[in-house]
Length: 292
Image (tube, rainbow, N blue to C red; front, side):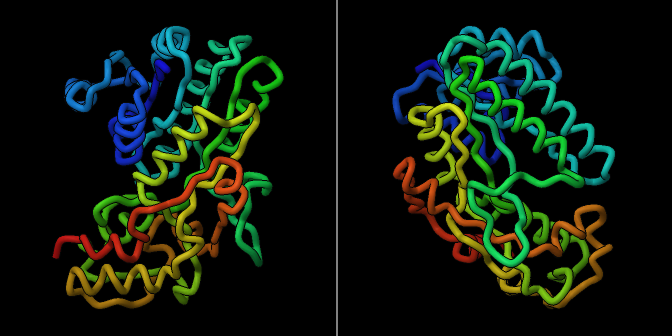
């Protein structure tokens, strides 16, 4: 299968790109910069130059492919405005990709986060949240609705931490904050739980969704149902030789309320539907790779 992928050189995208190529697929990766283009080519992919806002380029990539995986999303979490802008760019891009596939019965795999459900782990049947990330929820809903228009669309929901070699996700943001402030801090009492998955396990799920998912499928890329944030901070503090203690939620800016939320999730239905079995290290094991 010839697969067009956006976001193919990030932490998750690099793993997905490698997984697709190792499974015998041909991959064309969207590349905004010379560095991204060189990285994609070195991995064995073809390159289509352009950014997530180049909608005509996205349409071209989708029309020429047998399937599409949309992973690109802005990585500026410094302010609410930047996150809102990233959601709007993603929405326009996914809409353009989806419209290009109408009537083809080709797969479109999109990405979102797992929801938080009070009192229990979230499942694949739970609705995506409103609130600060409502635009992403609406984007995924529109993509899945294309199932009625001849697109084999599916959604892979990612946990709060996608990790590889000790880096990535919300746990990675905690590590960055610890290096910056000299404290491995966490909001609240630290009892809140975050789900997690190794990037290479997530990559396998994206490939399975591309190859096997029926139209409208929803999957959870969750290997660890929920690690306590206090336990995550404890590993970070030990690896960096820093004190571990609660800090004000406000220290994490606009992400503070999300960091403080208990948000475990399961992947029972995903494993049964697609035969997905995570095999790589858990988050707490992988955090042992943080360099002192």
